[in-house]
Length: 115
Image (cartoon, rainbow, N blue to C red; front, side, top):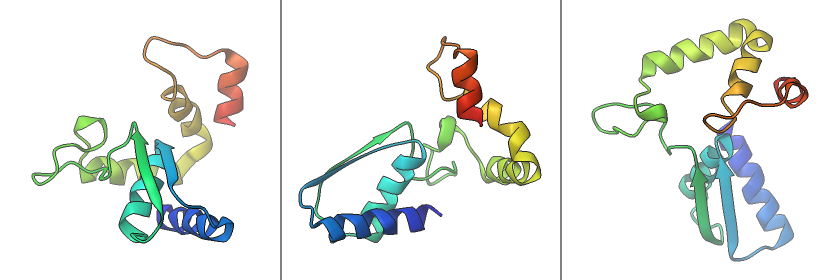
């Protein structure tokens, strides 16, 4: 879970005795960064960078900044069901979304990422 990943990062920071830690997270890594801020307020963070992710995925009247600008709870439920039903079939389309707009990945790179 995201919470477990954040706990692992906090544990690693403590184990290594780090101070003034800079965390940069992209996509799911950004969610981990937000969880670090929320769940580990004593962590010696100097800065957190969140790339391509909102701290709250779902859009609702109190939070208009959900994933992709308009990601409602129904979308999250639908995506979770699709992932559980057939992740191997869904993985290539998710991987395709990892490339910059207007860019097409080379076939071997796409296969490696989808795998």
